[in-house]
Length: 557
Image (cartoon, rainbow, N blue to C red; front, side, top):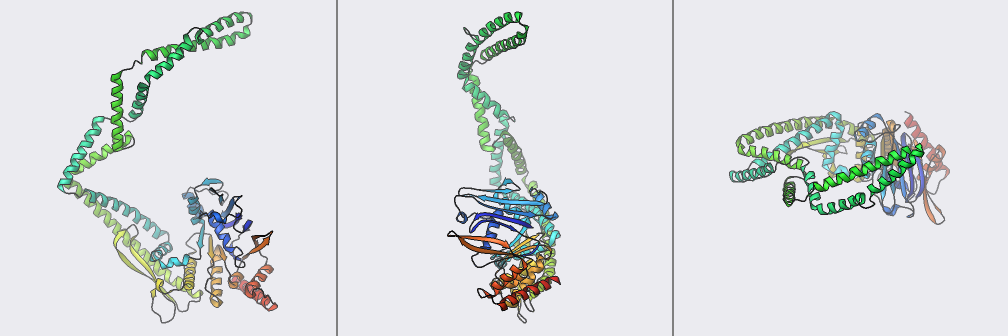
């Protein structure tokens, strides 16, 4: 769950440090005070899009950092992504300047998309637009799969692997199912290519050897001139060897008078010997490096052959030789085409049967999951003030198999007594969709294995009893985890375990937004503001205290 969020130089916020707790965290404040800025800043730490116009002071970097504490299941999933967990915590941060941004996980620089991957493990965010996803039928099947749990997801993974094998075989079968004329052409081409590669008889690493020989031969004159200069410096008049000999002679005489110089004499003697050895090796190199036009032509032609084959069949000699093996196999299949196609057909039919069987098994698991889901959703919708509601999932089959099987699923709902079940996408208003999504979220909370859930203004378009029911449902979801909710409704704010307030002030002609945690008395005053606006009378304060009392009593049940 989220422990702390730190923000610097973002939108209306100069600097903010916000601590969240387990349970129901509510963020309130007047319109424009910066409630959604907090989530926007959090989005940056999760790899969200950078909007440079949101940087408050262009002379400084914008910085956002979030600290998560993680449970055991989250640790396992992060480990699978090679994301380290240190002291049961993961720290995500983003620093943004005018020209570049930098993302980090636990202090190590990472690509920004990895922040998003990490965030998917640790956090479930319900934004203002998310309920619109219910208008896409494909999302209905995704939700069923998620609700189905590990057994369904494992079956889905097995199907994906089986379908990948089937697709590969089908592609191979289709590509080889050719007429006699084309088969003869391909046979001739493959025969020519195989002969071309075999005739070259390439050795691994030969290209590097030939390129080195070519460089030496091409630059032979320059090499000889450079070595001649080196030999002259060693062996010419007053060259290094003669100078070293004179120095050695003088030092030898001096060492007869002072034996402390014997070590230095030994060093000079070794150096003199090394110079002589070097001169001898240079002479041998020049004597053995006579330029041969025949050898030059031989190396040039071999290098051309190697590069031509690498240009046709692979970047390296290993690639070319690997291509040779594949071409031989393909030629063999063409020469015995009927037997090859018959064997490939058997494999294809076997793979298709496996895909069909796994698709049927997956479909059964999905339908079982849908049957379990329906009563849970109906119960959750009842809690959200949908009277005598009915909900079910209807399945149909696609024409062809895919890595997802053959299922299509669609949610159907009846929201009023006596009304028939109709497609969800055809009947629900925005406010109703929002509550339906909340019902689905409440049902899915336990199998998401995520300790933190965020709801951004899920209260849009509701009031009265419905608002109270939504508040209770959010509080229930927060019973075993952390829920963070931005709201403008007092019914939801009253249920808060932790109440945070965003406030906007103006100092030195600049607008600032601050966030602070409210005490119980301060929370009641904020409720009164939400109820009465600018007119906070004794009656409004009494209503606010009563609302808070009922919320505490309800949570205590």
